[in-house]
Length: 510
Image 1 (tube, rainbow, N blue to C red):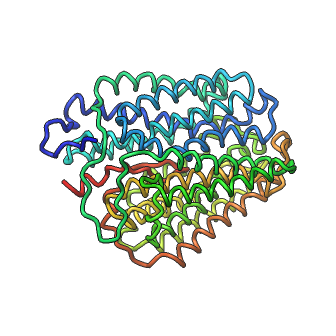
Image 2: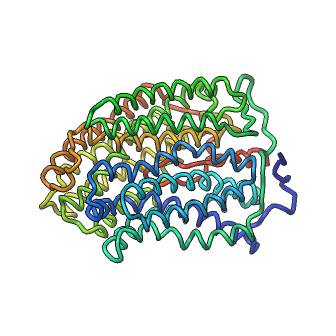
Image 3: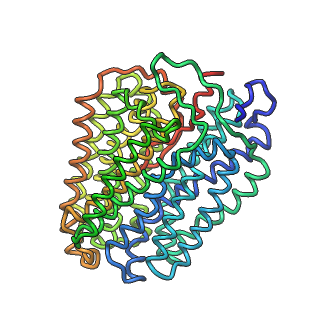
């Protein structure tokens, strides 16, 4: 493995150089492809169901197949980049994602669509870690903060436009174009990356860490751990999604999930190079933040999945209107998240991570007013503004506190685990909520039935955030050392926390 060059090495890129700008553009396009794949699908679900005469279970799998492989393999994707080259794995992920998107757009039935969505997630897991890692490994230390800021800003804009573009395509040429939308930026990204992005492998030299702290080698990749982690999520998702039909298959899947999860923990404990070193959970704050993340993002995952359907099936919105209706929360995040993170560094994590989920949950409860005869400005917009305010208070402090809870050398590993936990929480939520509220497979074909189930689901989503708030109040200190938080400059969409490169500690070394 070859370490990254020293700061004085001319191999480092500058933003002012042509190659630096092209490299930055390639990473922005790559991350935007995955963000679009995450954001455009929900508004297309009713139309997918109508075209294929599919039930709610098929729509759940259309969302969950993507999240399953992405959550289960994202840490492995980063390790593959370490071993075989970040540009190489990044380009492979882009090509893979584009091919899977084409298959989604041409899918003749739900089975093919679900399989293609799973393949999309594999591509996303390959390219997502490399996007920021390329910036960290390639740019001069003096230019990295600005490069990451530009990458973050453009990525946030792409995430905000995703539901809007998806709705416009669904109402225009059709839902298939929501998947084909990702192909042009992918096709542009590949030649840019091959021509301009420098290759890099291995890890930089590690900084000195405190005695007893986890010192990750990260020289290889944990195939057994990745397989068992993905199998655990897959079996749990299948058990929850199919549980309404009962029978021995769902019970066997639940038992298999428990067995696979146990085996995963044993493998990670005994492996010489684990994908998820259990020693990192020796930090009480890190463990608490991940428990809070599971609760918070489970609530958010269920909310966004069901609200996109509620706006179209019950409130009568077009796909475009439903996508545009969700913009206020995203805009609030884009405008104020940076200030919220700074405030959290001053106040400590307990106050924002207790107040934020409560405010966010209150916004969810307000969506009970969204129905067949509701007004956007009187009913929908106030709920989304309250919810967006809660997310502004909560999301950035969550990331700041997470990164402050570990050594700088572990920033990327910590954010990868937290990102995977958030995706897994959303995955389980989308699988479990319809079961918990008694939503039948055909509920989305009846506005009255879906409205009833939606009104049962929102208190459960808000309750998950309330549990997260209670955990924050009980487990976090009023003040916290946030000296490591400066290593976590990254972006995330509403449905996932920022994924920070494993190489973000470069700035600490320079």
